[in-house]
Each structure stands twice: as C-alpha cells, then as structure tokens.
Length: 195
Ligand code: UDP
Image (cartoon, rainbow, N blue to C red; front, side, top):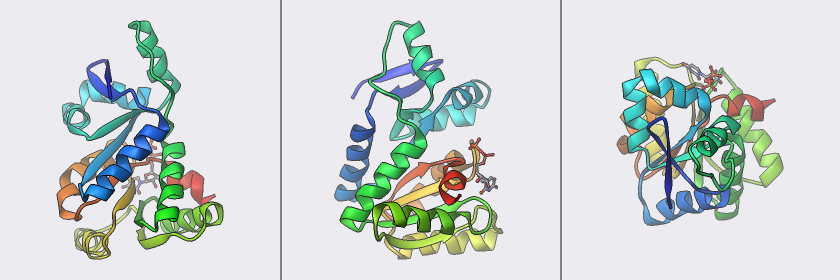
C-alpha cells in the first residue's frame, strides 16, 4: 500500500477493509503489530513531540483518521481512498474477532469503561473471546500483571485507550512483551463505546 506524508508523518493510504485485512494477516501469521490512527491533532503533536513522530514512523500501520488529514493531503495534490475513523476500524476489527473467536483485550479508560465497552460490543457483534479488560489507571505492579494477563491469555488483538500520546508510547514500549499481538491505540473510543 502507498503512503502519503502529512507534515512528515507517514500515513497509509488504506481503506477500513484493507486496514482490517492487514491486522488479521498479522494475526494469522503470528506477528506483533502496532496500529495508530492519525488525526490532525496527532499530526500537529508529532511536530513538537519527536518521540511520537518516531513512533509513527515505525508503526506497522497508521490510518488516516480525521477530515483534517484528508484535507491536508488534498492541499499537496494527493488523495486518501477514504477516512478510516479509529472507532469505525475498532468496531470492524471487533466484528471480525467475533467471527473468528480471536482473543481480544480491552485496556484503558476510567474504571469499568473497558468492561462496559466490551459488553456493549458483544451486544452488536455477538460473543467475543475476551481475555480481559482493565482500566487505564494502574500502578507499576498492576501494569506488570496487566501485561502478564494479556500475554498468558493469548491475546491477539489489543485495544489501548490511554489517550494520545501515552497509548502510542505504551504500545511501543510493550509490544514485544505481549506475545504476538496486534495493538491499536483507540483514544476516547472506549468511552464512546461504553456509553
Ligand atoms: N486515560 C487512561 N489513562 C490515563 C490517561 C487517560 O485510561 O492515564 C483514558 C481516558 O480515561 C480516556 C482515554 O484515555 O478514556 C482518552 O483520553 P483523552 O480523551 O484525553 O485522549 P484522546 O482521545 O484525545 O487521545
């Protein structure tokens, strides 16, 4: 797939379906992968946060989330196939995970948010293989337990909602401790899905 650079942030020119297919190809092959969703806010933040910029350059897939990113591409004479909103991609991945009974884990948000989001998603897509859920507020000791629960439960799809850029940094720091797992930063999406 081709890449369009928006203010030096490489963003994949993929559709939601292509992004979903990429994730499940990694899962089938037993490969760890990181997925980030770039909106205008994240692109602007990457201009001053060199660590975030570096993470986005090394992410396995960055999707064009947000009208601002599509608009910016047009300004340089390029066009993304479509907008891939983080919440839409997350729901699409969860739908596929239900069909395949892919082990999933929901991590982040205030107490109960991840659990409620998982329960609401099951109402939409049917029974999921849920390894676990955990809030996004934790001690160092709890973090070790969360990582162990994700890993030992055979999680293949992990949603991380710690806000930008914390979730991107967390995924970079821990991707290879989690077993082969596709990890996606979902920001406030769990809050929306929990409501
Ligand atoms: N969050 C969290 N742990 C933290 C900080 C934030 O779980 O240490 C959660 C917060 O509860 C919210 C989500 O991260 O559910 C997204 O936060 P925010 O809306 O601030 O970030 P954005 O979506 O703009 O990246």
